[in-house]
Image (tube, rainbow, N blue to C red; front, side, top):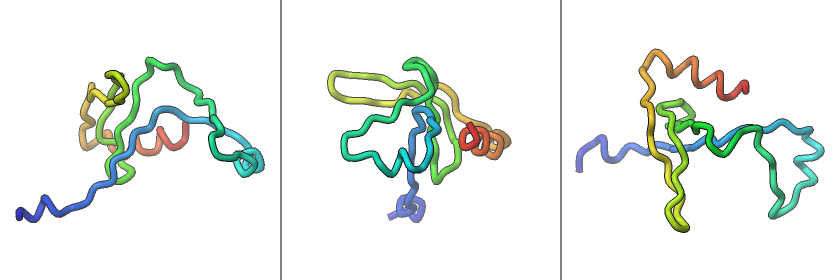
Length: 88
């Protein structure tokens, strides 16, 4: 097996963000809905090990949800994008 194939990468998709007081978050139960401050057609961010590596759009196909990559980040964009998403 190739050494690179054994490396684990945590992939996350950021669909939007929301701000709320911690006491409100703690009162939420199973099935609670958190409204995001975003539109359904806005781009999403693809993170690999908590670093933004790409931007994309949500694609619905029947009951499946996928992300279509629309832009791959340049290495110089990684640091700026990582903090701009978290600060939003």
